[in-house]
Image (cartoon, rainbow, N blue to C red; front, side):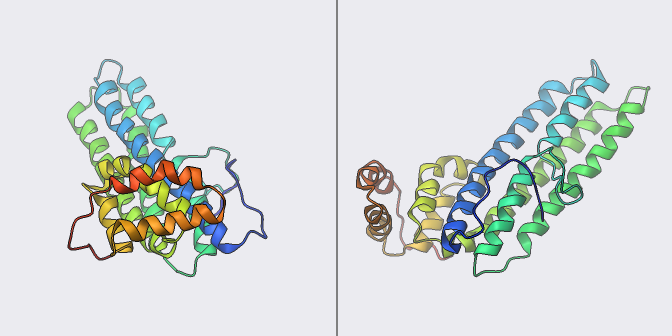
Length: 244
């Protein structure tokens, strides 16, 4: 995986734990953006694809797909940065900064790219057809692609969980998960993030709070911890705890 897209890069001499932390934070943000983009794509499929001006409607959806598509595998010097390119870019840094190995993350990204390219190829054919084309069949292709991409992103997050566990003493990563747990849960499943944290911290709120408090206190950010603490306490900590 290689990308020269204009996203923040890290100094080559950056300590590995810091590089791991930053890459995870960018990946988590990229995942939220990806799920938002897919939700927008789903809306576009039904709002735009009405058959009144079939070619223009297809072009609109095709542009949405390009915002998701992974360009960097085949065109490493492309400036057309997309959602998947960003995930690819920071996943490469994460894999280099981690003690873990994982082939599934790049594989999932490539599978998403290939799935999008298949539908884009069909779109190019549909746009050339002058006769009326079955609208439901076209819409069905896009809906199936949307469903596949959602599943693949969930698989990506599942693969990321081992790296999140490795970084479970990183207060910044933990707080990003906690602050955005509702967004992630909406895409990943009910209480997904709560269950993940329960697996990381079987002793409950006190253990999670201690890790985050220690991290911010060590860095002199005690006031910020006072902002985060109510979010920690609001987590519904069921028993028995879930294993990861």
